[in-house]
Image 1 (cartoon, rainbow, N blue to C red):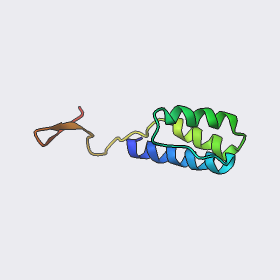
Image 2 (cartoon, rainbow, N blue to C red):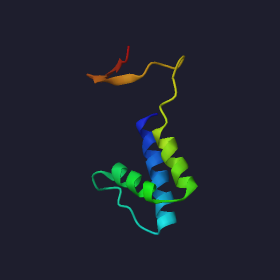
Image 3 (cartoon, one colour):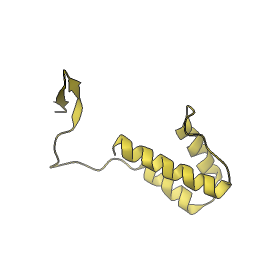
Length: 81
């Protein structure tokens, strides 16, 4: 799962918790993932539990896809081997 997809899933979980519990969660503070997981444990909503399960799923295999870029050196991509 890419970092963007991971953050999108965290935001989905945040919105579901805010709706279910009637609270506001600040995403700018440090440790937001741990706070979201603790709040999800206290929540009885099955939709919230499903969102946490989706968050824990491993990344799908990218067999046959283009190689992943590990970083850049002098403007050129460095690919994972």
